[in-house]
Length: 445
Ligand code: GDP
Image 1: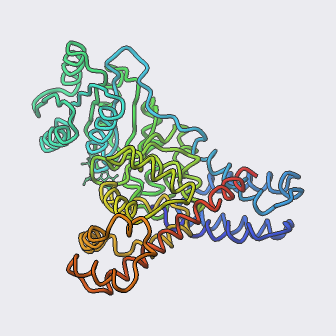
Image 2 (image 1 turned 90 degrees about the vertical axis):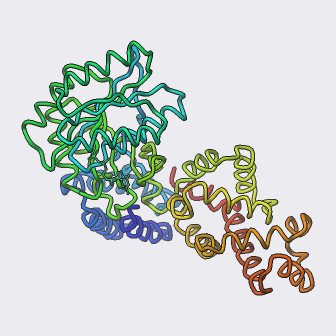
Image 3 (image 1 turned 135 degrees about the vertical axis):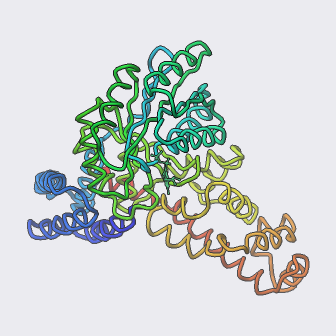
């Protein structure tokens, strides 16, 4: 996600870090690069201008020029301003109300409202143990009601049936009544979208809003629409008191313009990002972490959270500890990681969150992981003794032959696996040698 922007800004960051001295000239060069990168990412022009002006003002200040490591200090400024641009603090959902907390979902057709409703429902159910009900007021497309029914079942949340002949307001009122009587914590109201902004749709959603007085009114928009996404968000925001925005399909958005402009243009926080078609493809939007990712510094907290969500809590924690200390990472862990990685949505979702240079190394190291070769790798590791797994350097020619025979593979495959493991170990060592810590310090600069 946001690959283009990350690549361009990552390059600027790299050059800057190396600068021992900053002058007005090289700051101007750097700002030109950043400006180009943002415009190419399809960030709205007023947003770019404002952003550049802020960075410039701070860059020319004493804190940067007078600093011992001006390049790093300037990277820190860009990081902070990017974070601010995207809203500063993560806001999360507000459910602080007399239950049921009503969450009204609006957006154009195809934006991802129905999918997002199920994703958020699943999220609230699994992480906050909420009792969740979902209802569709899309009386124009019976298929939409069926779709919500299907995804609610997948998400494990309850679905309140509705029908094409009914009035949206009547459906909403009935669902609310049911939610109250059955002590639901949260009620999601999915609404009808259109292909474009249309006055009948706006009138209807306004009526629903007035009737329900929702604690959250979320606008769902497709990130891939770039500036159009932001313009639609602005139009909805003028018609409805939105409380937040959900950007969907960020997984397919290489440019990133909407993620960067939506807050600035609407004044409303970006609360969640959709990052895949599956129901666990959603992330809370953390401006600071996103800024780190965009600058190629990775999102270590996000990674750790994903690791912790992996099936085996204890193993995940142990792994994080090993990753931090760089000690004791062996083939047993390697095998566990392959298994967990598969459960955590595969390499690509993890690589997205790693700092650029680690992601590259990990890609080399784990290249085979996405292959069908995974089963074979597990087979090879299984034919090793526990001693060999914890001390792979013991594995010399005769042991290699035995392991290969045990797993039914060629000796070359055993060699390849040992090489990959060595590469992975190097990545772990890099993490622990303070590569990350140094970077983080640099950002605070
Ligand atoms: P609605 O008309 O607004 O209710 O949109 P849907 O929920 O039906 O979604 C439209 C399409 O976008 C479906 O094919 C979804 O699978 C897809 N979609 C929704 N969110 C995401 C996302 O975050 N990533 C990807 N890749 N696809 C998504």
